[in-house]
Image (cartoon, rainbow, N blue to C red; front, side, top):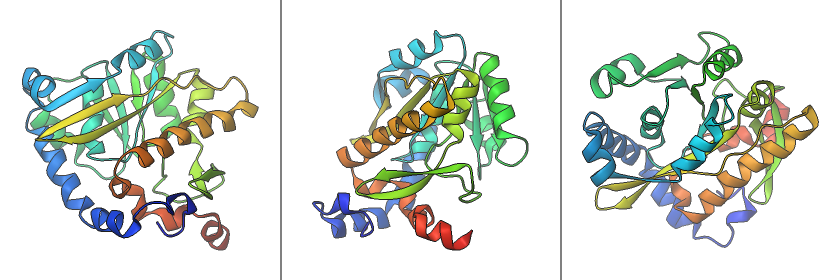
Length: 248
């Protein structure tokens, strides 16, 4: 957090203490939400309030599928299967017992998982989108590391290296991107928020504009909530340009 001037007006020590408990809180909240996945009436009445689902369905009306971008804020992993309550969904994941979780918590959902590295992520995304499905992927970090498929952008008063994959997929497929967040609001309740769709770039030159639009949402959501609930603080050093330059 000390690396970002954009947080100089915040109590960084307070948010650092909050972040210290983020891992256990993430596990607890995700498990709690999963307990209700088979009881959709209770899930969406008493546990999760959904804000802006029209943005998802308006994006889907293009007929080219939707690229969903869940942000690493709050119990973010629990947000992904909730997409499948709206539309058939395929998700790209890194480390997750996907088949076991699906069988235990939401066996009847049209929800597929593609493990990162098992096949081409771009090809898998295009296949899902051509079928009119949601293709879900986290936008902030490629766990395989920073490479030529990254771009340097401004963020919180500094610059970072971020993946271009979601924007490239949007350009190639013509599918809009819909960022979403899942946050605790207190008393065992959560808010699932769909943001307005970001249109697909129509040329390679417009990709950067679309990438900046995605990260504008990430920055605004981060500043509007608990700064200490962004999982990417674990990886932030890897996102800084000087580290990437040394490693490459």
